[in-house]
Image (cartoon, rainbow, N blue to C red; front, top):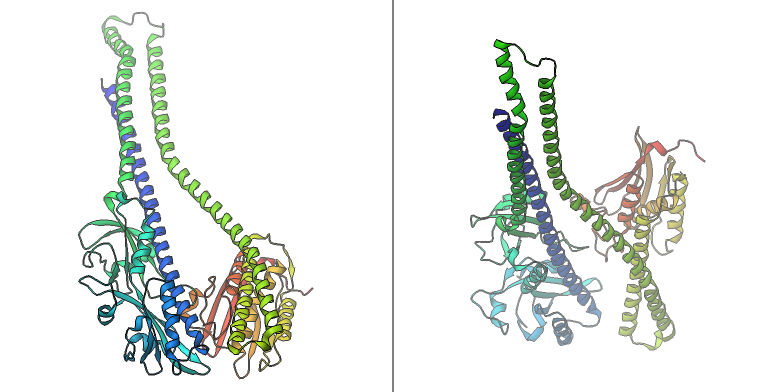
Length: 615
């Protein structure tokens, strides 16, 4: 009886432990998967906000650049049809107006606020010197004038403004109030694919943690800033909100787009923890239930089997007790030893079956890891398709853009004298934009090639390569471009790598150094190298404009620019190409700058493949 109960208890403990551990692992994995999906949803919302404000930011700048066509001091009424057409193009523009240099509104959509003094408004003050995007605010005066607005609370707006410049003189400001309803519209678009029963909320807070947008009242939709900061580092986690409920929460910071730096908004996506982990709990209980059922069945079977197998042992014990008085009847027939061997074999079979059932439960847990691996492979396949798509689009765009630019130049060459000044300026502007788009497509193709082409490992003479690129840049400099750039090149060690891709590194770094140092009194570019036990580090330094080190993290990202296009033209792809080429060679890149004094770009390649002798 004791052996049977022991086997039953052992089977119950083994199956229960395996079931509980497997269920907990399954719950953690499912919870992490749901948290990642919420983080992805928050990233999509942040990107939608940044892209939307960047479009309005660039749109206002482009319209403000038409100052040569419409003069605010001479014919301010000519602006009104342009502003109203812009408002009809994008329905969320609540008000667009043009001021003179003193801050008086001279033209506006619907004639609202015309002749009003707005010189003390933040959007006018800030936009007098540079394009400006202001945070969300209420506008009681404008709300009282706008038609069709109802509700107890005044509407909220985002200000977008840009200076109107004619020659060297700033003659006014173009400002627009973007209705905050556009953010709610984007929130609804992001939530459309999510089923209503999942109870997913998307909220937006400013850099201080104050709520800007959410499905609930402001007092209920607030998470302290002290808990948002660590949540941004983790990506997602469980948080207790001020309504006392626990939510699985994901946080993503909106960081701007291209030359629009962003307003520091944070997108929070939350889901009640009970709803989020309901599938995980269901799976956990299924695993535990199956494990307990198996433990009970095998425990009963073990108890019954042990009783059957120990019956001969009990007979042996009774016979041995009788032999103590009467002797051993039938000694030598081997029967007691045979019964013990049968019991040992049966116990081994039972343990083997218990281990087999435990392995089956462990394999059930491993299928969860296989699902994660399959999702990862699907994501890699999607990335490969995206690369192929971008390369195809780049090729398809290059031809039409080049044809447009060529046609516009022919019109300027053949009909330029017959056209009025306004038409010639517009054609020149379109020609320049075609050139810029063509350059952007070329660099996108280079970026695609960097990611896709196989590395050709050869010995690369880095010093000769740097000198060749520097000579090309000097010869390409226009005669009237100003002071020539002095280039000093030290002795540079050779490396083993892809010569074509490494030439792209020198081309982009030296082109940037030439561009940003040309406006200085004595432009100078210096190229040096240092060798350590592990790597060879190359450095390109210049004495140009430099950059703010607080923005250094954005340098090597695609389409990231730290200067306005009007100051230094470019596409924002060059340094991204540098980073990807160096990383493909197993190296690293970094930069340091003191604005207006010295800027250094460094890249290091593994030393194991470099040579000290020249070819």
